[in-house]
Amino acid sequence: MGDAGHILDIHQLTVSFDGFKALNGLTLFIEPGELRCVIGPNGAGKTTMMDVITGKTRPESGTVTFASKVNLLELSEPEIAQGGIGRKFQKPTVFEQLTVRENLELALAGHKSFLATLLARMTAAQEDKLYDVLETIGLIEQHNDLGSTLSHGQKQWLEIGMLLMQEPKLLLVDEPVAGMTPQESERTAELLQSLAGEHSVVVVEHDMDFIRSIAKRVTVLHEGCVLAEGDMDQVQNNPRVIEVYLGV
Image (tube, rainbow, N blue to C red; front, side, top):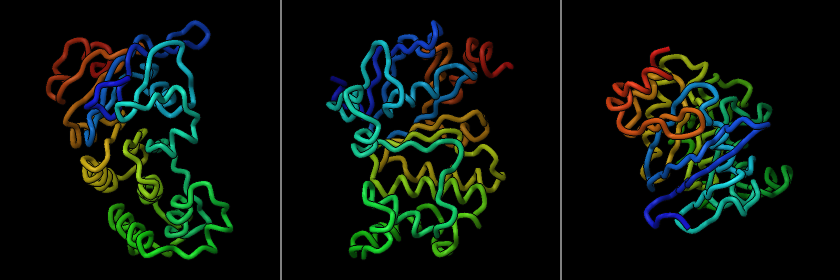
């Protein structure tokens, strides 16, 4: 089992596809409440790592331990999601013909049917939670707007809100500012920083200006394992990181 102090403990993880090692003995850990940025060139293993954590891909070897005691490799994708890990993909997947509020209600319901969710009355505690999430993601004024009317950035924030309705302990966020305006990127940085502490957040992103604005600790992946780790200055000045990633 993992270290008692870590929310996520990955040890010696190896994944191969047709002889190519997407992960090659990957070892890293995430602290509770930490905001960790993961960077690296295409093919470094970032997406495969998140696929293993969420149960989409099974490794050949290694361990992935959540909250010190849960072996994620024994769980299905739905069990992992219900157990406290939320993943936001690069392309937002909100329900465009539902309002912002209805999207959040649906996320809260989990396994309930679509119709049962929309017909059900929410409890006072659920209403409070929904309002808190709307406030966190900055969409209180848009709560009755259809998903289709939102900007790209607002859709990304709504999807983060849908994950927050499920009260995850760990959030995996893939390229959150791709396609955003500078103003939306700045707001996204504030949002992710506000989530750290109550949640652990792992951000995979290529935008170095964005990473610089939010990063306390950065992990650089290369060829399926950790190339370097540290604060942004340490990573930026690492000769190997410059050679394989930042210098291109």
